Image (cartoon, rainbow, N blue to C red; front, side, top):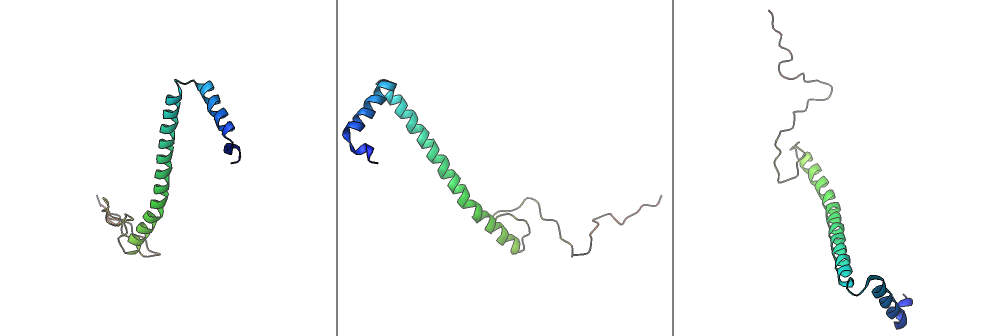
Amino acid sequence: MGIFRNPAVIITLILLVVVLFGARRLPDVAKSVGTSLKIFKKEVRELRDDDEDEPRRSTTESASTEAGSGTGAPAGTSATTPAPPTSAAGTSDPGPGAGEHRNA
């Protein structure tokens, strides 16, 4: 930026900041700004990592489903409940006990 090439402008800005905040509050303001930037950068980094992990998870899940696991769990993990058996197209599986009738 062309404005900051002139040393008089930089000195004027520094004096303006000192007058507005006071010499005693400048370290506190600088610490707060530094902490805020640190937190902001950390959150942005986590969001980027989450975005990068999401495509990997979806490709891993689809690969494990195509391999016949049927659980949809990522590779290397075990599912706590097995996937229900799938029936052939056009047929319906009524489940256990559906055809049983009690005669009284």
